[in-house]
Image (cartoon, rainbow, N blue to C red; front, side):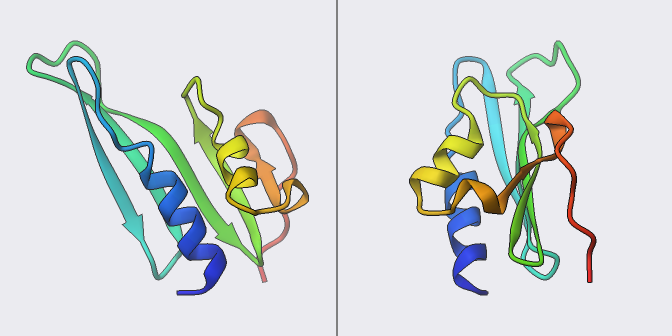
Length: 100
């Protein structure tokens, strides 16, 4: 795995901390460089499971497909050393670069 993938995976998985009446599950596909955290109510399900954060890498860009947190993933990625110009907020309507 390249350095960008390592950083994105580490930062995304930091969101998998759980909380009051919640379980979180880190999910990954290293081959396609997709990293996410899923969230589930516990002990009683009141809502469907959902994606908390999801990021993938395309041609040296980090595509943030979903972020439902109050701690924006983009800020955590920038703090980890990824330039903002290299991050695309797809959930906010930013254009995704064409895949090669």
